[in-house]
Figure 1: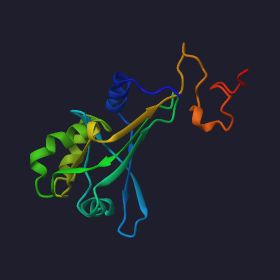
Figure 2 (figure 1 turned 120 degrees about the vertical axis):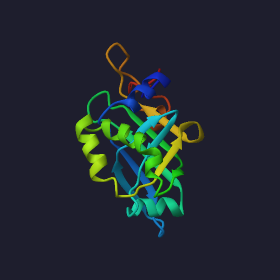
Figure 3 (figure 1 turned 60 degrees about the horizontal axis):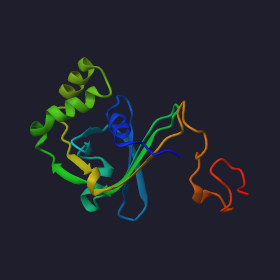
Length: 172
């Protein structure tokens, strides 16, 4: 399956309306996955847990995360990131980074709705985290697009027979 080029990945992460799923580790070791808004900026994924969210408590205890960012329509672009989340601003410092949060909201809803959303939730504290892609394990892939060979939809490791080529035919 083709990987996204650096330019394709950057463009995809900047697109509007694509939700991220964040996986964190609960105290008992079980996973917790939550779909959330994010903003890609300066080579990092930024996200904001509310003060009372379960996943914020999990991050405070253990900063390991897995992030999944994908789309439903073809070409099924996907970026999966595994790393450690860094707390940039704890609760109570919202005013210091509210402009970033406004940009994040505007990625998902209209400017007018984002302004209202920020004003309506201004007294609800949240933190600001980021995962720097250069410090994380990042994988990406997509289906072949028009003009590309259709072979290679599966990675070679998925075939039991090492003589099978990416297109499913046997090597002679």
